Length: 476
RNA sequence: GGCCCGUUCGUCUAUCGGUUAGGACAUCUGGUUUUCAACCAGGCAAGAGGGGUUCGACUCCCCUACGGGCUGCCA
Image 1 (cartoon, rainbow, N blue to C red):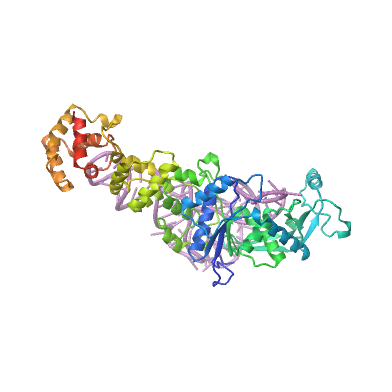
Image 2 (image 1 turned 45 degrees about the vertical axis):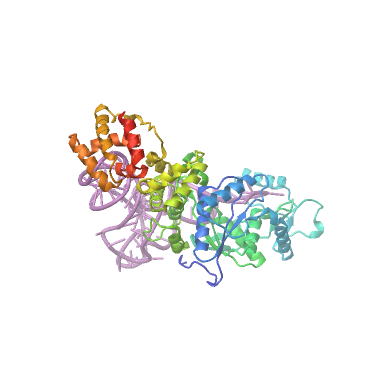
């Protein structure tokens, strides 16, 4: 089975993908990647990307979780077509399909109670074997039906095999004898996941089901429903889950698992998209690319079959490239959103303006927003500058003396690097020190830090008056 | 237990029977330097193990080991 054959469907039909999370918590990073793959595949081909909230589990579904998932997707820059579909709202349609399956003879009423099933399983276990539950009602005469609650079960074929032609996993053969008659409609007439997902995907016109490979086995059961209804089977693409650095399934103990946590840590969305796209997918040697390029390149054939591990170092590196590539205005805008997400104080107008003019000399040095802010610290502070412990050491008596004689020379110069350079070089030479020795107290005076952008850049960004004032403060 | 999927440098991966097994991140060394970075040059580093098939296997088949998933009136 050649993996390159992406679709058995006609190329003319527009592609429709979907992301279908259950609203039981925040958007997991793995879910975010699944959504991203679906989005890239559809959007890159002029197709539609739909959103469906699988809220049939009324116990665990919450509107807060739905809101968090939508926020997470929005932050990642993934937009969906139309309104999100509530699966629960479609329960009547699901029940209707279950009844139609009965009419077609591909489903039946089962009156076995949960207790009976539990006993059946316990007995099998006691014998040391494992047996699928076989309902005695599968071929029962309706005349014998009791007046009791029932579920509707799929009348699944007991022999033969079901073949999943998966774009990622290849040809997967499941023996029908290993599958039981799954419940489609519960005794309270609500649908199970297995039924609902098939009905909804069919009704929504989904052409490509791209989801985690924890659903690979489920695909066989779902395909049976497609067959039972005579519906066209979508193209399957079961992608491996993301694992933690230790190779185990990604969980809380590995650190952040929620997409919004990454926003709060200060990773730019574009970098996150790039990293997540490359995690488990490759296109030759392409590493750093824009979303437009990703849209252009993304294909199902490039998805690997092995689970990938999250690597924060590479995430940071990727994000660093994207911060450096970003447009200043856009970067400032995202930085502002980051401050909100991280619960940090917003920038004043003055700070925003100065930070924006400082971006050119800090953005290619930062991998995250906190780092960017730290590098740009000099542009955000106001006098008097409070030097940190390390930088204070370079403001000794000798250095202050040098600053004292240097400062007046800065009053009547044009404020350009070309004009400033000879003055600072001369000051260093005059005092018999290297430029590095002079730069240290300047950094302390201008930024209160030892690690800063170039002293020239800082001087140019904060301007002549502020520079002189800060130097005078430090020299005093 | 049964069934299904997976396994290339530490990590993400390229390779789709013939390559000195390539790139990126990380790491190490050197260079540049005004601190931190960035940047430049270079180094280290991989086909889980065992059987086949073949003139030739990372690539195809089988077994084993390890990892993951499913096996619910959860999704």
